[in-house]
Image 1 (tube, one colour):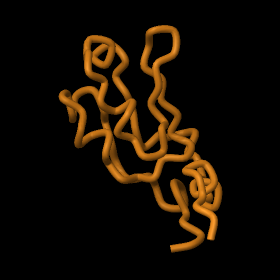
Image 2: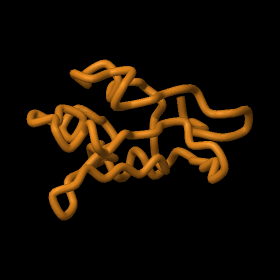
Image 3: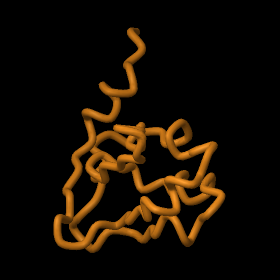
Image 4: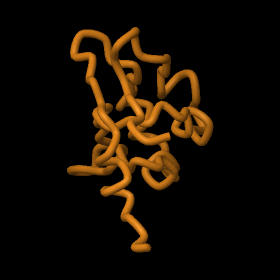
Length: 95
């Protein structure tokens, strides 16, 4: 059996993005002072990245695991995380 890549595995899930009320809000001012930026390598869906020397985040594709808030040295201040409203977020199709 062929092993699937992370992109292929994430592709079987369905993501319903809530454009009105994002479930994760990132304070870019606080994040700009964070040097290790553990969220960029800890997020299993690779949604945090550095673009033009600024932290970029895309909530589409979020697995709602909370890893970003656990590894963040400024958790609760830099990353505001809550579960999505009903009907939004990730819908796992297989498992």
